[in-house]
Length: 109
Image 1 (tube, rainbow, N blue to C red):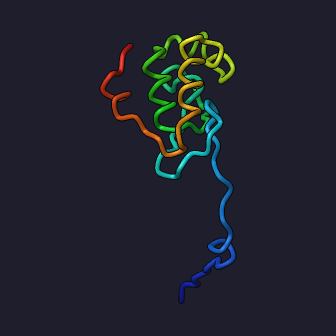
Image 2 (cartoon, helix red, strand yellow):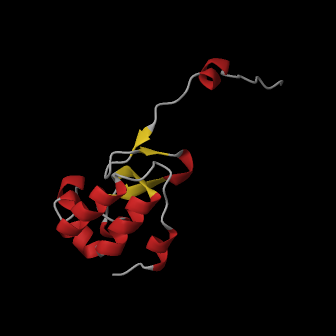
């Protein structure tokens, strides 16, 4: 039996909607999209939101999985933390593709 190949040429011509970071509200380049579980998977979380790699790394550097599950299980709760407010104010001034490699090296728990 012959296989049918269905090429969806219309979808190739249409530009997809930009993905917006749930934390800093900047456009996320395709190579930097990371899904953040609002409640960590280890604590039974299933819901994910799109974040920049740097925003995702900063959340996990600032909070433990237990803290994320109990107190910081929403974006609004995360944004209420003074340290996160300072980070978001800073990162919003950066271009969408900005990725601070020093953030990874300075990771703390």
